[in-house]
View 1 (cartoon, one colour):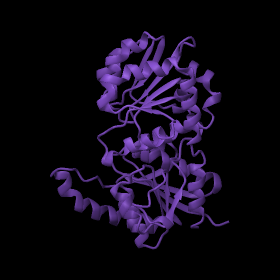
View 2: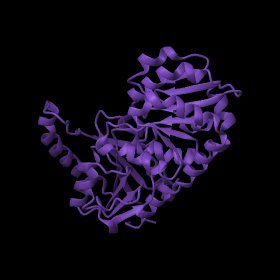
View 3: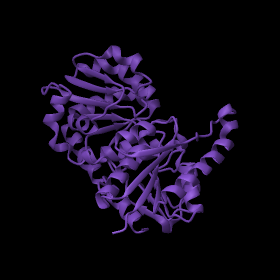
View 4: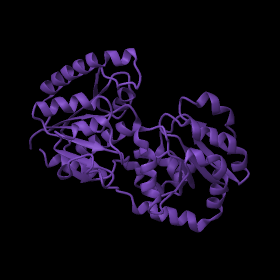
Length: 361
């Protein structure tokens, strides 16, 4: 059998990195002797996370455009040319069979250069509203793997495949890990567990909400695991107590989902996909500060199928305690949300994306 070679590129946030790692892991299962290389942006979190997952990564000197006039922006044309040139060098040396992009700055120059050199490219779009990079790359891509229906207003219909978003494979069996999770987080089995997720960088408005409501929450015989993000840990670690664990980042997502009875979360693409698979009752609080308000659209896609509840940031002060307490008291509602969100899961996403890649070999 021929030895295949693959380059993967994605980064900037966990939402772009973890899908790329999941795809790489599945390629390794199918082709144990395949060579896999990652390309990321220098100084971004992929430069740590990818080697931790056991893969080699090369960094490009690239960054996104800022929305205002800055030195960064003045440097952008030089960085872009340097990144295209470096991408060309990497591709010529490594000679990949297929190049896969999961979004983020580095995937732009790399996939563009791969297409120019005649190498098949695959894009994996996580959101219900694509970013600029993927819209531009889609014109030359051979296949576009999407997580939501009705994206033909952005991408050529004949190239799109509805696969869902890759999720960590260790989430597929969280139902069996409850005891392990309780021991790992040292939880009290007589209390319900609330999990608060602000995304890999944290969410200021969600943190402010929990700070304001924490006393009322604890009165309901609840313990809280509060992922506040590394930017906010200094502000909120003072709330740590027997019943509140305040953390910047959670490594064992499988166990934290297993422990949770109710989840409050942002609605980034990978969080939504993970929550569909683990099937817990969720209250989404979408971030209004993202391009095209795509978190609200991601959450709305679940809410419209009665799989979750959603509160906009503007509704938190007036609605949160009513909605939260009503959900907490209504076992039937919790069960209904769990069952309905599970129906929306696409647990075979990673395998289906790799199927699309294999067709191009």
